[in-house]
Image (spheres, rainbow, N blue to C red):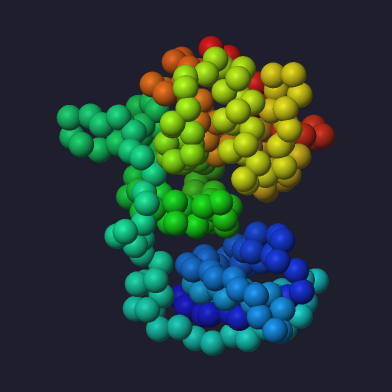
Length: 263
């Protein structure tokens, strides 16, 4: 494995991190750290990545020919430094933990979810998501890419639920308790709009640009978003017994991903 820092210059900021992050993941690499700033050259995106040495030339070729990239530089990174910067910062605002069992570990949504998750990796990822929020899709897509297919739905729903609970406590906890329909409009919709293009049609939340579609998985695939909606609207602070259903998904040919809410 090799650790490399890429310094990319682009004319466009919107969508740059997500597009190049997907390029990094598609080449078999993991994004350890990223930073984006404006400069006289344009938008400068710095990415520290890790992956197979024999795949480095392919990644450089894909970055060099990407339509958003004006120029890039690559330089090796010491592995110890890469490990240090990718570790969760102790002061990062970690998402609020779920209810705890006698053993002190976060209690997952179901026993099946607990057996299907790499708990250590999930708990290490959550502070990074809190630190980078709302720019979190690169880490989530990397997690999705690395997970065995049988673990994807349970793990991503659980991570989404934890992030949704954290966002609720950070942004919405000072408001009064709302009925479900009002909570969808005044909590779920603005929270989703921090991440994706979302609109409300009757009582259905529609998302037109979910990054989890068309990635080789069959059926509905927006497990993180479904979990996050449950974390935002369910549990003690919301509607007990809430079920979030993805009734339509672009991954199955629909125009938009649609989420319905049932108490």
